View 1 (cartoon, rainbow, N blue to C red):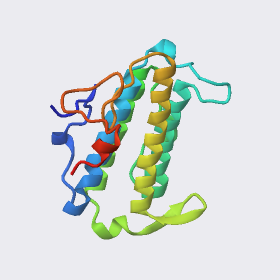
View 2 (view 1 turned 90 degrees about the vertical axis):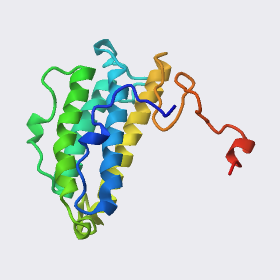
View 3 (view 1 turned 30 degrees about the horizontal axis):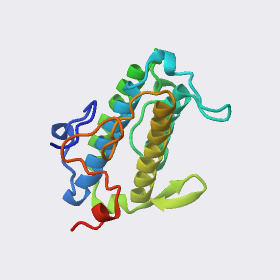
Length: 191
C-alpha cells in the first residue's frame, strides 16, 4: 500500500500540465510539498498556536504566518508570479485550518502560472535578496525553505506528544504495510 497523507488538498488531477514536460516534476513536487504542509498544519488545534519549545523559538502561529508571507515574497518578488498584496495574504481568522486553506488558495494560481513557463524562463537569472540566481535555483530554495519550516513543526508535534505525520516515509506514529524505514546496514544495501 502506498503512503497516504492526512490531507491531499491538491490532487494529481489538479496539477496543470507544464508547457515544457521536463518541468512537470517541479509542479508535482510543489503540490506535494503543499499537501504535506497542509497535513502538518491541520494536525494542530487553535489552542496550540502559541506553543513554542523555547523562548528563542517561533510559535506555531509565527511559523505559519512566516510560511505564507515568505512564500508570497519568493514567488512574487523573485520568480515574478502574480501575487496578492502582502496585506491580503494572511487569513483574517487565524486558525490552523484557515492557514492551511489559505496556503492552498495561494498555491493553485502559482501552479497555473509556473506551468505556462518555458524552459529558458526557468534558467533566467533574477535578483534574489542581495545576489542573482536562476529562477530554477530560487524555486528549489523555496521548496527547501518550506520543508525546513514543516520539519520544525514535526519536532513541535513530538514535543507536544501529538502524532508525527509521515512526510517522505513512515514515522514512529504512522506506518503501513510495505513501509521500509531503512534502519539497518542490511536494508541500506538492498538492490
